[in-house]
Image (cartoon, helix red, strand yellow):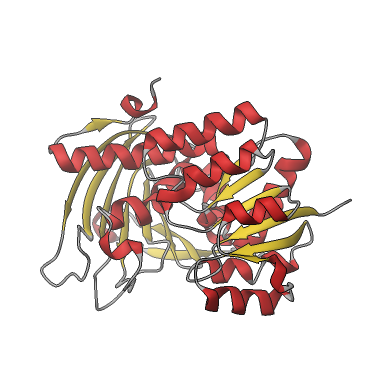
Length: 340
């Protein structure tokens, strides 16, 4: 089966982790790299053993000079819609870093452009492709301690993004990081988020220009309730990037933290308490590699990937509802952002 010819746009910072995967993936042939930083091109080009005439400073130039089937864009959200316009107008497929876009209007436009061009649009919600969340999803379906009733997610990490767009963007934790957790919440529970109440703030010690702190209440389909507490400027003990989760069920609790999943048992007043570790089968490849495989399958079959653009609108709309809630100080319906 012929490999899919791929252009990677963005090979520095977070793009570096992708540029270590794309040259070696069985489904793709990396035909060009793009970055505005020469040193990033130098490092990625050398690693991929890619000739210098396949290094470009703009995606426009790359698509003009190189024959390609798809684009991976690991760039700030502000430029995603422009890359989508370019890729789909050239008949190429697009896989984009999260969040899908800088605004819901642009996210919807990207989905519309992909569907009109009959091309695949995928968002790299890589937390879905990690072993522990996959096991957590299957465990919830098995219901070892009964039905899920409510839950909580903690996220506390001192993120050093000095000089990047995250340091100066509005709502950095809510928009750029909590999208991972809210999307994963949808994937794990199989339920969409209906209503969001969010309160954001900037701790006095924060090095971010805007709000690095977040308290949020989420109402899901089926009358399932979740709370969320986070701080992207939190020094001291830190959670894993996926957060620390408690899912409260009728006969016990399910916990997810890092690579660990466990079930808590206990009766009234804490009697007969015990924690049972749940086996988490490990994957032979990384989450990024699995996402690329899913992307390749979508391209070849025409069936949308798990993290297809249209599905991701549900996650991004919940984030945008959170932004509006934080601004207006009230609960906001997610459906308000999906209409039209």
